[in-house]
Image 1 (cartoon, helix red, strand yellow):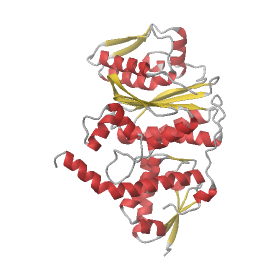
Image 2 (cartoon, chains in turn blue, red):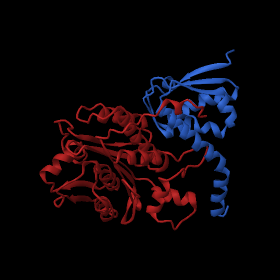
Image 3 (spheres, rainbow over the protein chains, first blue to last red):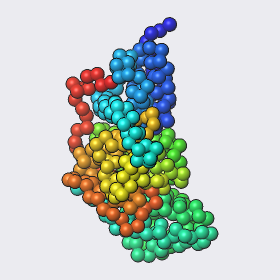
Image 4 (cartoon, each protein chain N blue to C red):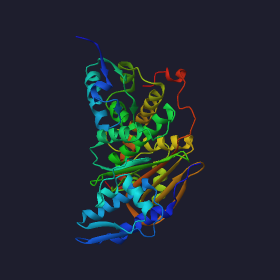
Length: 116
Length: 286
């Protein structure tokens, strides 16, 4: 059985326009399945010509709510990604880490405001 | 520097909504006789309001249109929704008016490609600018999909001004509005609507809950428009927020807009480089 497998964003989405959160969810499901089994995953962005934060939040950002930073960093590799798309991923990842770090606190504040 | 019509245009649109809000099973005529200029991209929020009127089973008609306003609204397909024949002479410098459902994100992406990016009438922007512009539009659309909660769709339209090298594009929804979302999130129920919009476009602030993080779309948009020396207007509920160079302008509308519209004006003559250096991109970002 392979310990490392390759995923193509273009193949999963079926389009070079990777902009919708619903498409990001399809990528997330595959990544999650691999990481759950401790597989190394190479995620290729070949043929992708547009990305959004909503797509990346769902596809990659969401991983940080499920797995440790160390696990994501160790098992996931991004391939064939443009420098500016890579910068967008960096910001999404940075925001996701903050989001999950503060999520419990934020939810608590909201519950307090609502008198829950 | 590009400029768009100011707050008074937004007030006029909100006024139409308020003057027709109680109409039901009626004929509603919008008298356009005093309108001698209409920024065609504003068909997006205008169409949203007319859609909400027709949802109350009213018959909507636009009357007394002067010829060049009629021409502008016909050319982008807007008037065909209100009884006119489809305009058959091409879109020219307009970007077709369309209504989308929230699940139409793929269809919207194709519309942007076909009606905007592949059109020969649209200016020859640098590759980096073209990509940023396209992604900004997708960010606005996603923002409406994720946050508005609209059941009435998302409306979009654009207009290019070749001599001025401006391209306006507007996306509107009939959802809960940014202020409602921010107040719910922050629990600050007395936060002014415009301040709520400002909060949503700043730092890492997000109204997102649940397993998928958020809070970047409007910030990316603001950064891009700032570098491009373009302009953004956001109208949501009673809030008016505008940003070009310098600090944003915040104001309270007299009447609420029943949702949100985001309007961008980009400078198509922008020669800034949007490419990042490869050294920065080599570090492990995960």
